[in-house]
Image 1 (cartoon, chains in turn orange, red):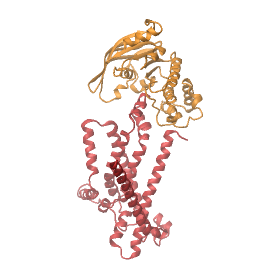
Image 2 (cartoon, one colour; image 1 turned 90 degrees about the vertical axis):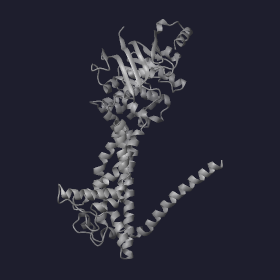
Image 3 (spheres, chains in turn orange, blue; image 1 turned 60 degrees about the vertical axis):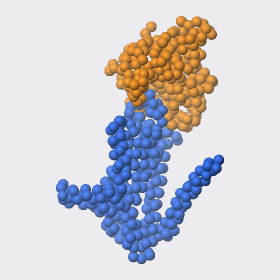
Image 4 (cartoon, one colour; image 1 turned 180 degrees about the vertical axis):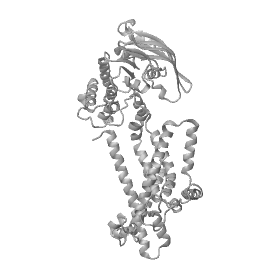
Length: 252
Length: 291
């Protein structure tokens, strides 16, 4: 199977402190890849290496190679064979731990990134907005209040709005950094359901804080500890049922 | 417990003091100035339309000083807005290390220069120009505006910088993760989100340009010149007019006209404040997309 990402010898440090060291791994292009590890293990840094977000943070230093499957071709995103960082980030969408809508209306939150694309057309942009909101189940809930501030939505709705905002740019890869960490159980389950429905259209790499969630969504698991990749397992390698959870927490 | 109550009492008393001073000052100016507010105060015995178009000079009115102050504010803003805000953006987003420290220090030092010294600088600058490049150079409205721009620029820089630095880091991260370029981030996220603060700085700068007397006294203001004839001409201004009246009035009526002028200056400043904050609110709504 072709991988959607090849990472070799990836190291990142901030102000001289190592965040991740010498990570070598491949992420499969089928199914969701879930990154697991205790806090401070480098999960977020690893994720942000895939859309070159680390380098916007003060004190960044990095080395190694990250190749992503973009437009059907493996490209090293830290070299000239890949589009530049801003273009790359449109093709590798990201959703953060805490919902982060801009202080704009629901509509403007989705439309702003669209309007800034070259050759944006109002009519087509509107269609893309509706499609993205439908894909995250938000359309029926917000279609009557598109022009109200996004921060009046509930936490779960805000997070689905952020997911829709990432989708509207039509990325090829989706990076999710503990997208349900700040949400209640019901909102989390809703998001999980939508992620499963998105799985076939996007390569998804996500960080999760819960083994249960990882097992529900993931088909490939990468464990990090102290900035190093300690093991990678596929769902088929794990035992069935309750045993799987125990095996996973042993690896953590 | 008593300490908490003491603190509350003290802060309450301070608030009363501020409000009281404000009310006293306003009341004083209104009491003396309000009865003087009429067409005659502005235009004297000249027909308003003639005075406004400059067809006839309005010797007895404050219209030339009023117009002079408006020109001065406009010219000062034209000279200071772009460098002031630009330098603030540079400090907030691009500068780092020693260059940032040196630049901040320079801005702080410039902010601490007394206005009379800035005026003196303008005056000496003209002397220098007369001996070298331009023997005909003289103090004028452009020189006054340039010196005022020097005076107000530091506050513009500081306010722009702190407003942009005060935008939550998550906005920057959000914009970056959506593939915004640095320009798009500034234009569509940072500057609009910092708009209110930046506007505050602009208001402060406009107010300073409207009220300052020390700078313009040495750089081109005169008591009686009529409307400014051009960028290189002498001009009148309200604060100088008030200052001059207070020092030289010959009868009660002239003093009262001085109060009228103070009142007009107050209304002018308040008017600028109102229109600027309305403009800002309209721009913010447009950014947010609220209908």
